[in-house]
Image (cartoon, rainbow, N blue to C red; front, side):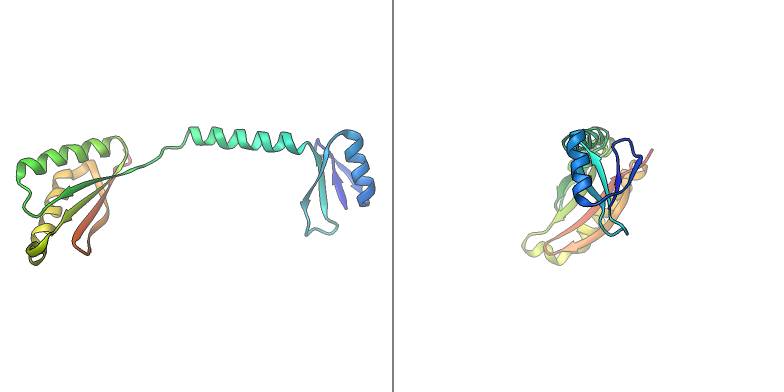
Length: 155
C-alpha cells in the first residue's frame, strides 16, 4: 500500500505490517484514504485530532447559516378588511425578518361552495404584500383550504 505521512509527503509503498509499525512508532493512526486505488493509499494521522478539527469546522459553519422559518397566517373567506390588514402587517413583519409566510384560507361547511371568494382573498393579500415578498408557491387547493406561500425578497 502507498503510505503518506502526516505532512503530506509520500513515504513510499510499504506492506501492511511496515505501515502499522511506522504509524505506531510515530504515535499516529494509519487511515485508509483510497481503498480503490492501485495500490491502496493510506495516511498517517492523529485521527482523534482530525475528527475534533472537523467538528469545529462544522460548528463554525453552523454559526454563519441563517435558518428560515415558515410562519403561517390563517384567514377565512369572510375575513373583513381591518382583520386582513392586521394579518398583512404581521406577514410583512415576518418577511422583513427573513421568514417565509404561508397564507391559508380555511373553509367550513357550506363555505366550500364559495372557494372563489377564498382564492380572490389570497390574490388580494398577494397584491397588498407587493414588493415586500415574492410568490414561492401560487394558491393551491389542499382539501378544505387554499394555501399561498410567500418568500422574502433578496434585497
